[in-house]
Length: 259
Ligand SMILES: NC(=O)c1ccc[n+]([C@@H]2O[C@H](COP(=O)([O-])OP(=O)(O)OC[C@H]3O[C@@H](n4cnc5c(N)ncnc54)[C@H](OP(=O)(O)O)[C@@H]3O)[C@@H](O)[C@H]2O)c1
Image (cartoon, rainbow, N blue to C red):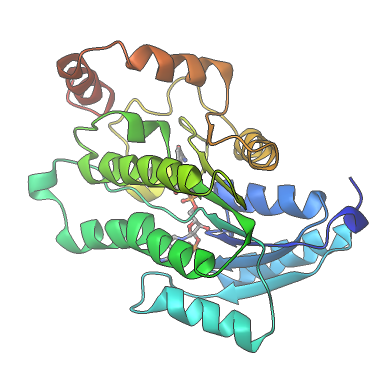
């Protein structure tokens, strides 16, 4: 599709690497202007230079979304710069790894803020008073099961998966599309940031950020509510519905390092 086919603007959080970076490429490739949000300005600037080749406008907003009041400040910065957003992509997210009892409480708080609170605040402020637009939230296959050794992370993604499906239902009869993108393991900086050395997640069935971004973009545009990239992952999610919860918990312990 050429750049002239769309003059919409997508805002993508966590766009400096991984799935967010791939999503930014996907939106720009389809002719959307893009707002890139993350902390590492140089990476965002480099990506902006690359994406400008698509003939779209790229805006860079380097900020720490974990800071107090970050979502409100983000929207007011956009207002000052007269940038109107049509599609909100809540992609930012981190994982904490290990037994919860021994976890770093500040890291747990940051995880909850980035994965849940920031997403909720940005979405509410985006949707309030709006009659058209789109929201793409990045949940996870992890959100369909409990995750021993990544308890907070799996629970945060359960929130995103459930919350987004409910919003999609609330907006069924409107011109607002709401989609949750639920990838399985993806090869990004995520695992290293989370310190998941002992986990078997990522040992098999790993997807690329590009595969995930393509599926997410397409799903949003065709109006799918839940997008699970990859046939094998989709099948796994269907099969998980028939697995007793006790077995899900046991499997989670095995996969995440209690071997
Ligand atoms: N990788 C997987 O296996 C996988 C599977 C399912 C779902 N997901 C979900 O996909 C999403 C993206 O993950 P990813 O795998 O692409 O992770 P990633 O490679 O670690 O990228 C995370 C992004 O978030 C940004 N970020 C982190 N902390 C931030 C902060 N305080 N303020 C602003 N930006 C911040 C990072 O940029 P800066 O460091 O520059 O700020 C980076 O752009 C997450 O929601 C994750 O839960 C990942």
